[in-house]
Image 1 (cartoon, one colour):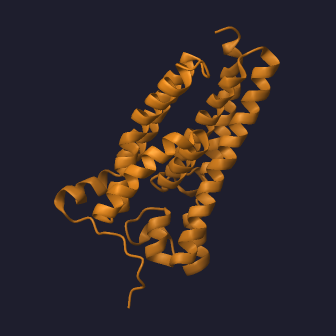
Image 2: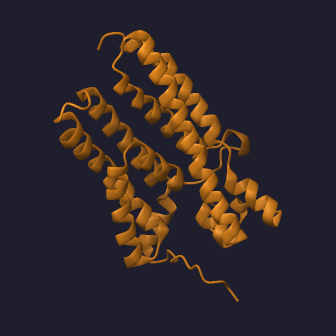
Length: 231
């Protein structure tokens, strides 16, 4: 594609910015503010909203969820507007500005999992991945969220529900972008390919971060989530 090489450095730049934003671990920060504890030393050891619920309560967990969502939203928006400017300035199809959203969002998820500011020990990327799904394509998000809800209603475990949503993510991305966007002429084929590959990488990365949960699920030891206050 003509002038596509002009996008390489901007994609790297928004990726670095997304990683640095993702490294801001609200789970660690808020749990320290609420309890003066490190959330990674309690519960599942995960720096995410579910473990914050166990360790610091509903308010801290809700704030963690919101902050994790917002940092991905900021990353994705930054990626889009930077790439849109570069595409317009270099005569590249501005539809490809959406690739900046994928680059920044994916790197934000990696930053959440391996935060630079907290010893590279972070969360599992479920909320940030969900935020990226929603912001990139609400149709794909609804499909993945439906699988999440069905699994959660069945097993009441966030980990298994998240794994199921991630398994569906690249499949849903391909079918939606290919059959609804590319076939209608709305997006170029390169977008379908890159979107599907990145969705597969995100899904695989989140699932790999759940390897301990998978072992517990297979052993029948994964505890269901409870929103009831413990006595």
